[in-house]
Structures are given as C-alpha cells and as structure tokens.
Image 1 (cartoon, helix red, strand yellow):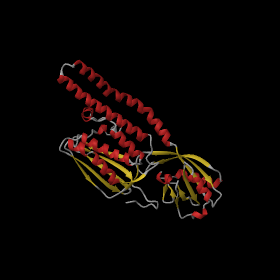
Image 2 (cartoon, helix red, strand yellow):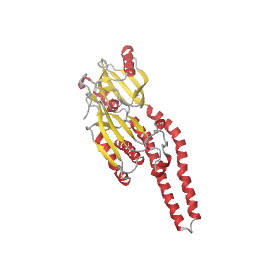
Image 3 (spheres, one colour):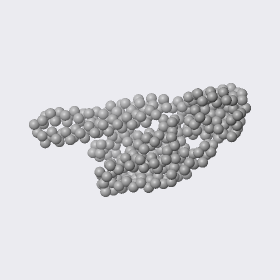
Image 4 (cartoon, helix red, strand yellow):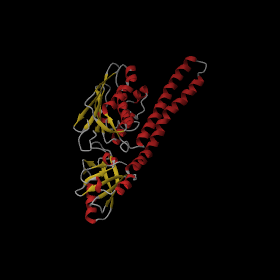
Length: 353
C-alpha cells in the first residue's frame, strides 16, 4: 500500500514503524492531523471519494473523528457514501477511528462491506431470470431438431430448419456470453483497482468494435471527439458499456441512417452520448429499459439476436464507476443515451486533462 502525503505533518514526524505496519493492512487507511486535515491516505481511500484535497468529504466520518478527539476512545461505525458525485450508486463502509498518542493524530481504518451484500442480493434474483430466458432458445432448438429428423428426406426443409437452428444456437451463445459478462461485472468493483483511462481512447475502441455490424446494416457511425478527459475505472467494462449502447442503436435503426457518438465535458463530469435515428422508445417504457431481459420490441430483438441484457449491463457498469445513464427518446424519431462519469481529479483537487 502506498500513501499520499500532505504537507500538514512532515514525513519525519510520523513513526516509521507505524507506516510499515499500515503498509501490511488490507483495509484502506487515513491519518488525520488536528483540524481533520488528511496527512496520509491509501490510494483506495482517495478513489472512494472520501477526500477532496486534504479534507474529509463525509460528514458522518468527520463526526466520528470528533467524538474520538473529545473522548479519546476508539469508535467503530457504518457510513454510507456515494460511489461518485453523480448517479445512484452507494458504498456501505465500516470505519474504525482510533486516537494515536503521537502528535494528536487520528487513524481511520476503512472496510467496504457493500460489495458482499450487493453480490448476494443480485445473485438471488438473477438465477430466477436466467432459468426462464434459457428455456426459450433451448426449447426452440429441441423442436427444430425434431423437425429436421421428420424432414430427413426433404433436403429443402432440412436446409430451412438447419438455418433456423443456427440462428437459435447463436442466440443461445450470445445470451450465455451476456450472462457471463453481467456476472463478471456484478462480482467485481472496478474502483477497488481502478486505472486512469483516456476517455476518447475508450470510446474509439468501442466504435471500432462496432464497425463490422454497422457496415453490414449500412449504418454510419460518426464519432466526434471532445476534449481529452481522464476517468477512473476498468477499461474493459467501460468499452463494453459504450459498445453495448452503439450496438443497441444500430440494431434499432433502419438502414442508411447514422449513429452519432460524441464526448464532451460538463464541469467535472465527462459525458458520452450515443444518438440514433431509430424507432425510439415509448415514454411509458423508458423506466423499464434497463431491467434485465426487458425488450422494447421483442420481435426485433429476435431478428437481431438481442438478449435483453445489453442495457442492464450498461447501467451496472456506470453505477459501479460512480456514474449514471440518462436517456431521451421520441418514437419514430430516435433516442439519445448519455453515459456520465466523474472526471478524475488530481490529488491537489485539479482536473486531469
């Protein structure tokens, strides 16, 4: 574990043994000087959004620290913090606050308890949904195989049924892959081991992945890059989120139309927008499109091989990255999806650009 140092307390004033001990801990760590100035912090504590510069951002944690200063007695408590400055994602943290005899310093040990609870809740209702969705293509394959056997002396019918079997097999393969993707996303926290990512590079990779599909459907992908922005997270997951949105736009658009992809900055928020000229989404269905296995147009989903998991995966990825997804749509005009992520701030509080 490597620590960030503030100038509030010189390094030489902190016991070497203390720092060596903290290096061995699995928990995230803060050391606070008088005035609740953050003197040292582990990288994970910074990425949780507990700090801004050298100041605590959680009123609940600040209150616990002040109780410890007043009573000189260790305190343990649970606090809830946003995963980012936007979006609905939350972290449930267990914190232990301890008074150190050295220089009136306070030691804060932080454990993220939300991950285990979140995974348990997700798994419970996910299994029920999967069992239902897998029955459809498996049942279709079973019926088609019987039809092939019955038509074994009719080459034209065999070819027709075999083609449909290939289509159903691809649906099943895509569904299993999407289930694997969603399971992987739900089982991990991208901010625990986050990387600094150039947002335009992430979007460019997703656009490149979708070119084959767009060309086959005669749909142009127009990517307009905004200023370079850095976000924290998992590159593979963010590429997947943008890819899913672009693929969704392509699948629900008529041929010879355009899908526009843009990046831009709004204060300290990075935004990726994907706009299509497709069938649009009825207003009464906008609140449901991010549900697992929900399809606006089931017939079109069957035609394009849609699994009903793509947008659910997008929402999970954005929430896990401390962001959010917005959507605007007009039937028979098109839809715009916006992925919003906090821009990574330098340790001094400035925006990395």
